[in-house]
Image 1 (cartoon, rainbow, N blue to C red):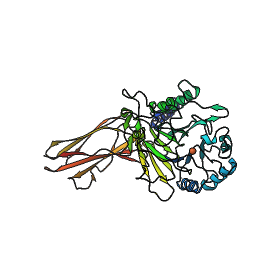
Image 2 (cartoon, rainbow, N blue to C red):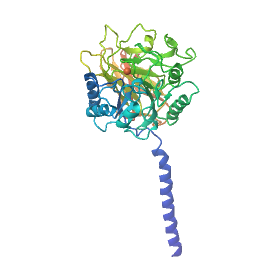
Image 3 (cartoon, protein in one colour):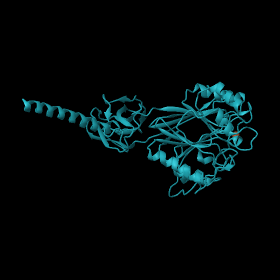
Length: 445
Ligand SMILES: [Fe+2]
């Protein structure tokens, strides 16, 4: 009797131990893909607003964009709707009283300006994101949806008696390095740095932020840098330092500093820094000069005689695998627009070869499967055919959520002799977005 009770207790204990062990083992499985739960989000960005009918259009556009927050790139009221509280009320009347209208300072909002002070603007348009590190309106950052770190800095502005300088070795330079590196070591997919003033530009401004800061942003391959100050829209090529580009010097062009010219409006994530100047918030616009000594660093500007510049804002969608930007024009009389995408390149190569009379073998390799869940294979017969999906069930990746890749192959057993076939892969990301490979061609014998 006693031994039967003991045996029952041993079985009970064993069951409990098994449950505890299974639960304990399942914890790492659940946390293996840290960004799989990340929710895509949208924000708007623009500087140099004022309080004109042009500003009305921009603020109404921002309100209609359905964004999660706005990044305001300095030069806020220019004295319109004075004092500062009246301008804040004006903005809130357009975008709503609780919309996160996040502020950065401009030269018109710094010390000793008749047009208002950032401290007063920050009091009536306070931070509504929460969990900020640093001083709101001046130098701070926040992380959003586990996807991006957004950093505001104030180079060449005098705030509360201090002229903010980001020269090598300065405390503010080191703070910025720490903020960028911290985001990378926390494996946040995107780093975005916002400020008012410029360095390279095709407009009227010079390198006021200093070359130390500009080259730091390039060296760190900050994914997206946002600036105002120039009252126009300019999107750069993707820039990076390398063996033949030790630094970018203003007022000249060095081709080796460009890693992607952006003419196809897409960039590979991690290959360099993309700069967007968007000082089109309402004040009178400045021209861009396509013959400027720095013009070759830019992929999209409003070219006089070709484009009519307009007011508007930048709208940015962020997911784990892609950052998509779009200039949303809000003033009439122009169709000037721009759209670009920075996306994760997960495919190292993709090849096709004939292996038998009816068979084509496709081979491909991924470099990272952190955001990838699977593939679909698409094929077109001949030059004029339509692409059709060949596989019925999605082909799963081997290491979903992991930062390393794998090699794959797939056989097309229905390649008819004498035909030309075109293949492409669709890479499916965990956030539901798809990414197309290049199209490759093979001729069945
Ligand atoms: Fe301005």
